[in-house]
Image (cartoon, rainbow, N blue to C red; front, top):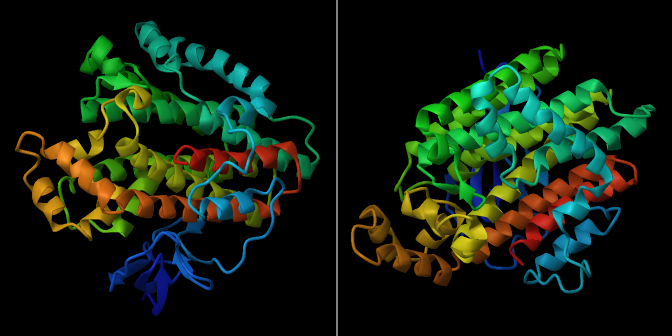
Length: 421
């Protein structure tokens, strides 16, 4: 029998009923009641926030106290507090953070990774060499493998490892292959012609080659994953591939659905974005020999950083130009994918619902919808949500000793928020 307990909590201004199931249950469920509007100041002191809701393997979504935030190595928490005062980053930090500077301490690791990626994809399948060159030269920041390297080195120091192991490096390669495969399939499903300002694989080589290229990288990454011979990491990364599919199904089944709730959006965002980051940085800590407490903290860091990144990306879809985005602005909304800014704006503007449910049948209706999202506070409230997740990510790093690697992990959080400052 499954035992269930419930309690009322507050999540980002919402009253929730949280039901905690026994350890043999597959899911933790909750329902949303009396959604309260959130102003630009965010939650008050003592507020408690439900980070996520689904339990799997050794990690689960849980309620986290937000009463206090300890100081961080480089003032990361202070940066988050400054952001809460209107996203003013003029005083902190003095110079905008760039990905190149963030990853400078693992630049040699990334160079080695870049050399390996194309040979890994093309070695056994010459037909895919051209596609692989297009994929891995498209200007990506290599954020996910960089995070693997940063956490690997931050935790390796704790256990007396002088350098990264072969498994650390292989994990980073696996993570980038999985991420790239998911992007190729996303572009096919979304019928996107551009990725980072360049033609997508399916646009250049056709849908058949694109699908096969993505499938091959998923299969190749799974083979390398099995050869790591660590059952905990194998389960973690295998779950990610399942999450990708779940996220796509959730998105496809809720297009143009104006009744979609914020918690549903967060679950979908976890599946599509945060799951890979969370699993990969936890896996890095596992290979360093960290205990379960440390690996779980790294998972929480990756999860909340990933969610914050997704919210920021969804904000930028409304605030940046097509040239900056590398794709047409408002693309998600045009295709019926309702993200955080839209969900918040729908609470205030009934007209927006009518436009979306018409699937933008009238000329100019998409532009009108974008204006309504901006004028109804959707952007500002989404910014608050991104900052909330960023603060949780910063707190998860307190278990690490001071180092240049922890500094870079904290700066990664601030860099993300700077994108919407």
